[in-house]
Amino acid sequence: MQQIHLALFLFPGYHLGAWRLPDAVPELDLGIEHYVRAAELAEEAKLDALFFEDQAAVRRSNDILAGDTYGAANPRSIHFDPTMLLPALAMRTSRLGLAATSTTTFNDPFNLARRFSTLDHISNGRAGWNLVTSFNEDEAQNFGLDAHVQHAARYERASEFVDVVTGLWDGWDPDAIVRDKESGTYFDVEKMRFLQHEGEHFRVRGPLTTGRSPQGRPVVFQAGASEPGRELAARTADVVFTLQSDPTASRAFRDDIRARAERFGRDPEHVKVLVGMTPIVGDTDELAHDLADEMMALIPDDLALANLGPLAGGVDFRQFDPDAPVPELPESNAGKSHREAIMSVSRDQGLSTIETARYFAEGSYRKVIGSPATIADTMQEWSEAGACDGFLAVPTHFPTGVEAFTRKVVPELQRRGLHRTEYTGRHLRDHLGVRRYA
Image 1: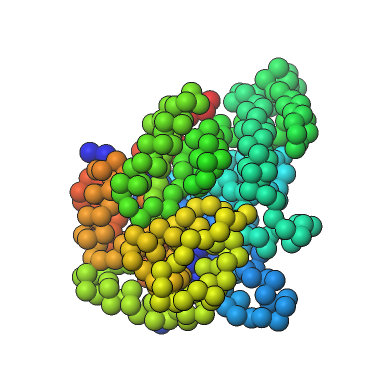
Image 2: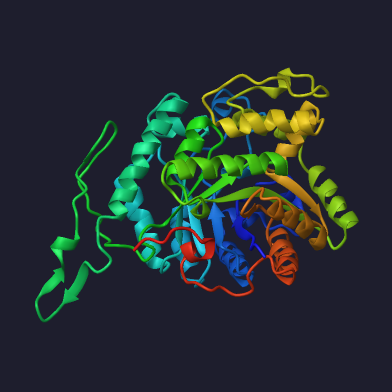
């Protein structure tokens, strides 16, 4: 039976109302002890990885600077730099994969390659990098720019960036560092290579100062729905995240990514597609829907509408009739996947503008509401339909949202033989079944 891959996406404030529940701990955002507990729960459930998003800007900064605080205090704005968090979690876990987002637009490839190689060493082969080009326009103003780099240009940079990173990761043979006391040889220079990359965007000498990391290369994650995003994912990513609300469309996306990967000379079985889902779990379906309604009632409409704007490239959704469907949205320099998802959710589910805003205020991914058995049914149906290789589960809050998924839904999948009950490998690449690097 096909095993379902599972990663847990932990992002404080992801559901814009759930943090207000009496049993929620909003201090997760800057509380290392809470992150440690979440990692322990994920490893207890034998998940593939714990995953962290990142945005290097407080949302809607232009409006705040202009004196308009409409919807500005978004709880998704407060969180640690995840690459600083992962080493701490590595010391409290032994098998769980640990992945973090880091942008190619506002980083340099040498520093990023070194950072994730270090994480792979610290975790003994469990590190993953989520490659993004950034869609939050406000980030540019924290890095000396007035506006975000154009979409096509940032993907061109990202394509060269990832080639430099992987070249640096490949700069040492596994047995290059010998530390031979008798001969006085610390490393074999014949098994170390200078990259000497000279491209349009970067000049990088190399090599890294960390030697070859345990996995050879940390796992590369990516999410991209645009044409350049799909091309980059198919050429470089081990795992591709996707915003999909329909299994037929999701299967088409997975088939497209796998076909592109094969065109690049890659084994399509080594590219895993994970669908984002927000599980809202109750002991019964009725209780789960009651919880969903309770959390929804805690989201102010103005915050929901304000949250939707940056996802669509700065569109002010207050200008639309709140009770009418979302109109055709203009192309923007922001990420393409959210613009398309906003329109398709409104169209396919018959939602008005305000209902669509509330939908995305609960998180961008598909909501699966019900008992553990009901949620497992949906996950099994998608898996058996070939719609995905697994799921990126985004609990609404900590700790009970995380506990409900890891201690109720995952055991139901395990009872069905759909998810491992023990780890069989030590590295994140082992868990995911993606290409191994010597």
